[in-house]
Length: 73
Image (cartoon, rainbow, N blue to C red; front, top):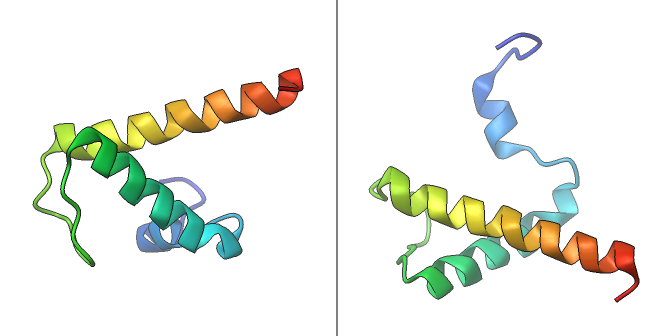
């Protein structure tokens, strides 16, 4: 990838490192809502569909929350 010296660093770093625990909890909540069982540590046995549904739902919820904040709700 252009401008990327180590592909692993982009996967393990966050723009706001202090948010890491909150994002982990958010991911676990979304997975639970979707009926996807996450375990502590590596979850490489998830199907692409399962992993994608978790990420997609997280993005959807984050966008909804931001829109609510921007509209003053």
